[in-house]
Length: 342
Ligand SMILES: [Cu+2]
Image (cartoon, rainbow, N blue to C red; front, side, top):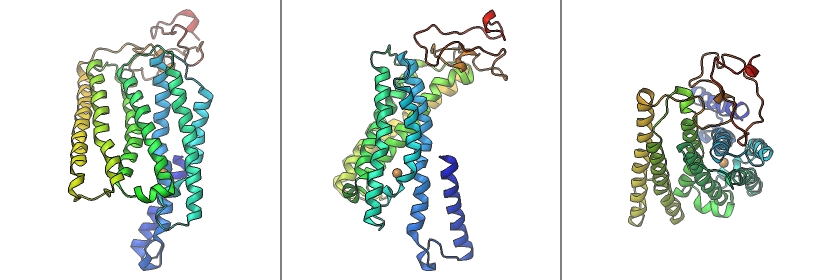
């Protein structure tokens, strides 16, 4: 997606430069250009950009949910193939951002129809993650709390996207706070929650230090509550007609704005907490063992942090991935059991 999408936005920026520097009309109507063309090129990149952010996070969530539920990823093939489906379909839906731009209604119909299809692979992932947890032996450590946050928030982000992919409702919601709320449920619920899940899961591996688990759980809950306080009222604001990018508004919107601002401060407190204890742990955290989560996967078969060569001896893989039903094959680096020698 990066290879196919990013050059388009780079070329578009070059065209803007050519227009500004040499007065050649491309997008500016005063020079004979077409501003709608700019929107097409911008969204051709910027819709896939959302999934460029969220797909890696989805990979993290599969890893974390499996580890903290002690189960294989349920329906692994479907979870993996749905990533590919999202990557392909994601390139054919950009026009759902442009229903009110004056693009043809028939183009809008097709973009709307295709946008609903992205919901299918996303729903496959969410349902398979829930099935992975079902009857699993769940432990609610901080990485798992952030992964659960991802599922809860991203699901709301995805479902409210359906209102925006429907032309009739988008005419009402376009350029209102409803869009702001939807966007943050997708990008923070998806990208940031996935990032925090990954950061906590691999922090001991990366730096060889444990972060304080209790404060981390507390911070995860503060961020989750702060997030909802910030962005749930914005759905209501947008529904009532509060446009985005305005700093003056009718008095009846005041209460919802104040709740939203309070939520933003709550969420910021959570973020500062995370930054604080992570930096603290670099110096004062407990030394991390090789495999603090009893996870499966090669990175847990070497020291924390790994030596420059990653492995002092070539490890031999004897288990399928996610073999949480079998004991882990961890061994002391540099002192492997005989069968691990190559
Ligand atoms: Cu989009």
